[in-house]
Image 1 (spheres, rainbow, N blue to C red):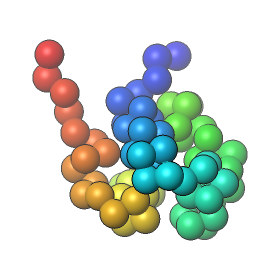
Image 2: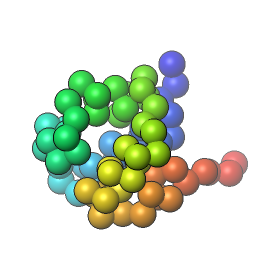
Image 3: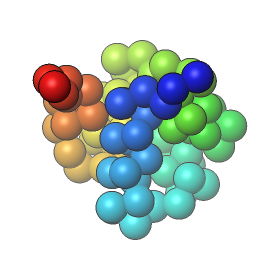
Image 4: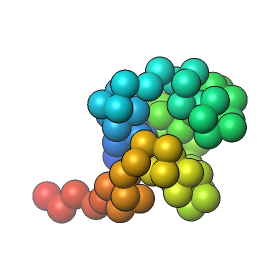
Length: 70
């Protein structure tokens, strides 16, 4: 399965902000298994999760779901 763009962006922003998966999962109130699945692209985050992730990472939700036109 090809990793989704949103999965790659969440992982990239998490690393850019200096969080481990454990730290971010704790801040989001989810298990590391859920966050890991989202970052691998095997689980699609719902709108509420996208809002929570963007709030914790201090970015706009649009930065996570931005569509890249080729």
